[in-house]
Image (cartoon, rainbow, N blue to C red; front, side, top):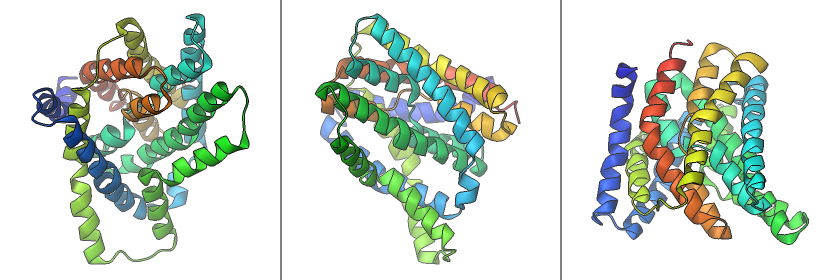
Length: 310
């Protein structure tokens, strides 16, 4: 485990540098917001386009993989919602807490880290996990919050969800890359070098942005934040491992990548969603802060285990 910890340490060290810059106000919230926009709309999108342009849809789509991930994540989602209901929370808060329990920082942390630690072959399964998180669970939480608030499901919700997906640069860059690959278009050298240079900024930029954004997060609601961090860092990867290794038995390598993705801390975009809808933003903020801090140890432990699977 020590060897894996030392390999993951530089990634978390970059997060720590960003946190220090944010905490000392060397990087204020406005600067962090613009860095996050650069990574989200440009650097990470370029990286995802470059990766997906070298794949085929057949390589990306694996129905057993999809079934294993959706079953395991839906199971944990249900547990988190049940716990919230038992505490007397409503549908809106329960859905946000469930989102914290299953949606990890795959885009900003998983794509760059797992591609380096587990090799370029990890890119396809990581992007498939990212797509399911964005399309399935990203849509579900909006439907549940909006439907719970209105007291009924309206067709307009589907329009809101659809527009949200079309505006997401990660989804669109994957779709564009797969389209490029499907048409078997050659990648011109200037374009290849352009997306390579721009995509190279994704790893340090994303990790620094994660840390800087954590500096503004509060540590309120510690008991609930602790439960949500446990659900994301421990329960989610354990259930996913059971699903990927036993219920929908996958080959060892894609199963290992899926489990590694499930071990990642709570995604930062859930806070944006919670803030937008006014649903438990402080609770989500604390869950992101706690899970990212504890993930230094838990991710290393799970990575050490999954690397023995293949």
